[in-house]
Structures are given as structure tokens and as C-alpha cells.
Amino acid sequence: MTRYGMSIPLPGGQQDQRRWTEKLVELGYTDVWSSETAGVDAFTPLARANEWAPQLRLGTAVVPAFTRGPGLMAQCVATIADLAPGRFAFGLGASSNVIVERWNAQPFDRPFSRTRDMLRFLREALTGAKVTRTYDTFEVSGFRLALVPEVQPRLLVAALRERMLELAGSEADGVILNWLSAEDVATVAPRVLAGGADKEIACRIFVCPSTSDEARAAARQWVTTYLNVPVYADYQRFLGRGDLLAPMQAHWDAGDRKAALDAVPDEVVDDLVVLGTPDQCRTHIQRYVDHGVTTPMLALMPWGVSVDDAIELLAPAAVPSPT
Image (cartoon, rainbow, N blue to C red; front, side, top):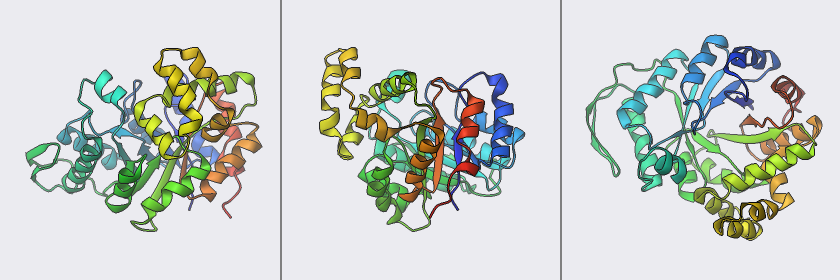
């Protein structure tokens, strides 16, 4: 079964979130996925959505492995898992030096090891076992979770490059992908599926059902802002876009933001952001599924299209069934 999710909160006022969440159910969406950067935290929107639409599966994509201690992380995960038994997928990721170091005053040190250690700790702690263990990046002594979920949540790892992709396949229940094209999925998914054919391949897809110049300009700005963050710049080089993006990154490093924006190739925008008519967007999203994504999660970009229109135009009922 291909699931079909939406990133929350949807762009706009908090007062509209309940109406939109209920509408997602009516339109056939199966999941809602939260994230954590500089807006709301990842867990509160899921707790609210669970009250409004208990049919939906809840997911995080993603929570940084650095910004909560192990015990608090286990408590947060257990709380949502207890509220939504069997309907919660926890996505854990290294995040970036910007979020971890510059915004949260934590050293962004050994991101692979920290993510792996947090994953291993959660596997044990969420069962209610008493954890006394020295990991490579932290030590836990005598922690026992007081709220043990009735159903263990699925644990997913956000992955960009080889080691994290392999961790997602070998020790997690699947992977969360981000900032890649539909065709790139065929390159990275096999590294995850080597750990088992049942692994979930979830992918955040930036989408705006619009052909306007405003939407394309905003997409170009979005690409420029994100792909100059070091972890994403390295990721795009891994995916083979190093030469295409080198001029943009050189201008950015020199402090010329306008020249960097102008240097983003159109083909990169078209690869990484879904734009176009509703039919074109649905076809593009389907390409992700055809290449191996089991859970497309749409990240709606508010570029001149209302939320109500966008969630209707992109509704899963209108998406062709996988072949």
C-alpha cells in the first residue's frame, strides 16, 4: 500500500489547522508529518491532529538527534505513541550544523554516531527496559521509561548519504528522504532495501500546484537557501549535481546572494521542487512512487495558491494508482 501524507502545520494561521486536518481525511490523505526547525516543535502538532482526526497516521520528519537528551527524547516519543497506538512513525535525523550549533548551541559533532546511538537507545528504552549503557556519543545510567507504549512506534532514520542510508536499512524500520529528485530515489533506495524489502521509504516532496512566475521565483529562492547549507551541499554532490551547483555555491560563499540566486539552474529547480498544473504535479509525484517511495509526504509551499485549493488539487484520490 502506498500511503499519502501531508506535512503539518499547513502554512497559515493556527486557527485553521483543525479544519484543514479534518479536510485531509475527507480527501483521502492517510498521514500527517511534522518537522522541527525554527517554528513549532515536532510533537505538539501531532497531538492536536490526533484529537481532530484519529484516523490519520502520525509521523515526524524529522526530530534532530542532538537537541533533546536521550531520556527526554524517549518521553516525547512514548507520549505520541501512547496517544496513537500503532499509528506513529518517529523520524530521527542528524539535522544540520545551522539548527544544532547556531540555533541550539549544541556541538554538531559526529552526526552519524549520534543518530545511530539515539536510535539504539530508543529501541531499548521504549520497551520499558532499564537502560544503563555507554554509547559512543553519550552515556545513560539507570533510565527507565515510566510510560511504555502499548504498540512500539516505527523508527525511521532521515538519511542523505551512504552510511545513514545503510543505518536506516539495517537498524531502523525505514528511511526519510528529502531534497532529491524522483529519479534519485532509484539511486538511494536500494541501500535501504538491502536491509529488507519491507522497509518504509518516506519522502518529503516540496510542491506547489502553480505555473506562475511567482512560484518559480520562490522555488529558486528555496533551493538557494537550503542547498548552501553544508550537509545539503554535500548531499547534492553525492547525487551528482556538484558541477551544476558549483557556480551558485561559489557566489554564496563570496557573499553575493543575488548572483547565487541567478546561478541556480532551471533543471535543478524542476528536479527538486514539484511545480506545474495539478495534472503535472500529480504525474511528478507519481514518479517518486514509481521509483520506490512508499510514503510520499507533501510539503505544501504557499506560493500564490490557497491551502484549501492546494490540498484539494493534490488529493490522493486524484493521483493515479501505482502500476
